[in-house]
Image 1 (cartoon, helix red, strand yellow):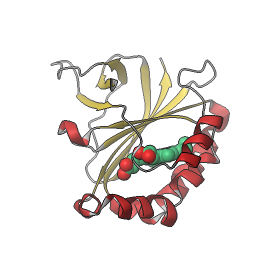
Image 2 (cartoon, protein in one colour):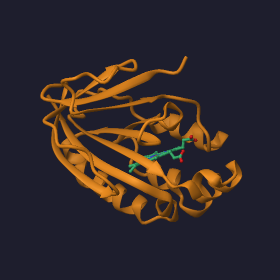
Image 3 (cartoon, helix red, strand yellow):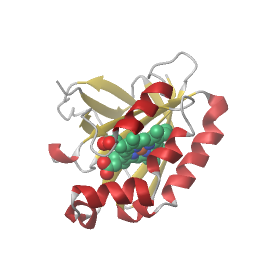
Length: 181
Ligand code: HEM
């Protein structure tokens, strides 16, 4: 069964926000912390905002890519991975108007998303959550955890991915950096 998660921003939570930056489109209201909880949390009155998503099957990764990713990827909640990034992303109508094979080509053959990302594993642990089918304001919630010594490498990864043709299809993106509370 898909695993649902809610990111509840407010005064308290298991992750403290250190920086928020609207990369493209409207940002999100400032908050002190994010509580990452399992389940589809109803919008609590005390929350500044709540974003929801669910883990799903892969859409684009091929057999060799899945095998490579599994061979090197690190789990979430590693002791040393005290920093995290939550990056909600919404893609354009033009992206969603494409056929599956066209999206795959743009994602990997043209933009090398997986190939670039693989260079940063296992330092960066990742979790992709889908939101579009929940009618959420973003299509994806991307979550990353890493040790402070890999923060520079993570910045480098963001710079490289945002320079790819895939990112021409990003409508809205907000970057939220966190540290374990
Ligand atoms: C840490 C290294 C990374 C690796 C190895 C990686 C790998 C992947 C893979 C394999 C997929 C496709 C999943 C599928 O087949 O459905 C994917 C999707 C995605 N990734 Fe990454 N990624 C990385 C970093 C990032 C970063 C830093 C961001 C955001 C700035 C990001 C944003 C996304 C988004 C939004 C999707 C969904 C794309 C879509 O379905 O249209 N990824 N990633």
